[in-house]
Amino acid sequence: MTTMAGTMFKLVVILAEPEIADRIVDDVKRLGARGYSRYEGYSEWRRGRGPDDAPGPHDFAGPHARIETVVRSEVAQAILDHLAVTYFEHYAVFAYLADATIARRDRYV
Image (cartoon, rainbow, N blue to C red; front, side, top):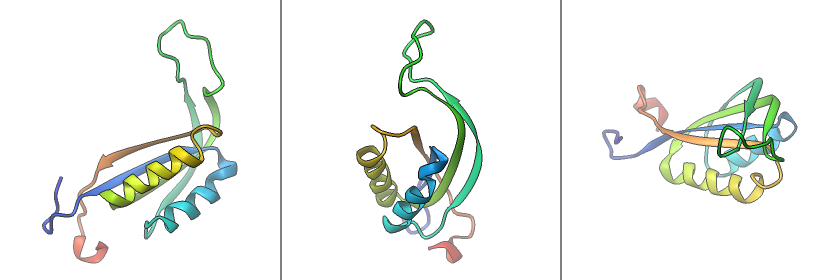
């Protein structure tokens, strides 16, 4: 999706263990996000590939922090790349992107 000026925006959503949420927020800001929202909640997910797969070390159930930010596409990619290198292997962290349309673009950009 393209805004009037041709800038692509992405909603970045990160679910992470609460113990590392402050670090992730600092990383997200350092990588170019100008703001974020953070919520505390509960998550459950399985990385299994079929209904008979046994739970593995990367399955997760428990409290989480949900961190959301709307950023330009290149910042979103930098955030995902950083999460992959820094957190994915060692922590319960899940992230996804969605296209975002900015309603008050004149105040956001």
